[in-house]
Length: 315
Image 1 (cartoon, rainbow, N blue to C red):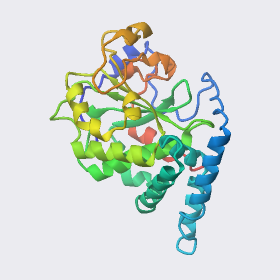
Image 2: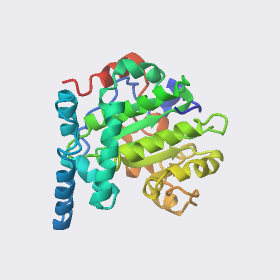
Image 3: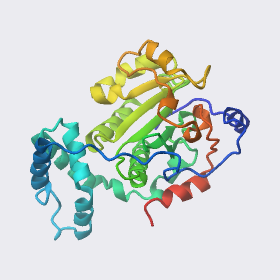
C-alpha cells in the first residue's frame, strides 16, 4: 500500500552495518540483550471499577451466540480479555460507555473481516518484495515493522489492507509479556504526490488502526523525509487523532546515522507531527536494520521470511 523510494544494494547495507554478514532470518523473539519488559502500573480503584463495568457490559452480552458459531464465540472470548478492554478504556480516557460502544463496533468488524483468520496464502503476493517486514524489537520490547515503499509491487488495495492487518495480528502474537504496542519505521525518501498511496487507502489504514487496534501504535518514525512530507500530512491529518500524530517522529540518517539527542530536540518541527527523534534512544543498534542506520544487516529473502512469519502462532 506504500510506494516508492530507493533501496540500498547489499554492498551498501554491509557498509552501513559495519561489514557484518547479511542475514535473511527475521528476529521474531525478544533478544537476550533487551531487558524484560516491566509490568504495567497497577490500576487505581476507579480504573478497576471502570474495567469491571466494561467487562460486565461486553461479556457475554456483546459476544456472538455460541449456538450461531461456537468457534467464533471461543475466539471472541479469547480476544475480549482484560488487556483488550483496558486498551479501549485508555483510548477513550476511561469513559466506560464510549469504550463499550467502540468494543461493540470492533467486535462486529472482526466478525465480518476475521482479521485473526487471514492466512499467509491470502496475502503472500503482497509480501514478496519485502515492502512490509516484521523484524526485531525496540528497547521496550515492542515489535518493529519496517515499511519500504520502493518495493511496492501491487495495486490490489483491498488485499494490501488485509496484508497490513495480517502484519499487525502477527506482531500481537509475538509480543513478549507486558508488551501491547508496535513500532513502525517508514523510509519517506523520494515520496511524492504521484508515488504516494491513494488517499482513500491511507485513510482506510489509519481508520483500521485507530478504530480497531487502539493503543497498539507506540512509536512511528519517518526516515529521510522529503519536501513532500508537510503537504502529505496536511491531507491525512484529519484522519488522525492528536495522540497518534504526536507519536509520529522524524529522523534523517542520510548525513549522520547517529544523531545526538539534543540536536533532535532543537530541530524545527513539521506541522502536525511529533519532534525529530534519535532512533538509538529507542532501538539498540544491533536491532535496527542497516538500511535505517543500524547494525542489523538484514536482506529480505521472501522464502525465508515468509516461512518464519507464517509459522508465528502455529506452535
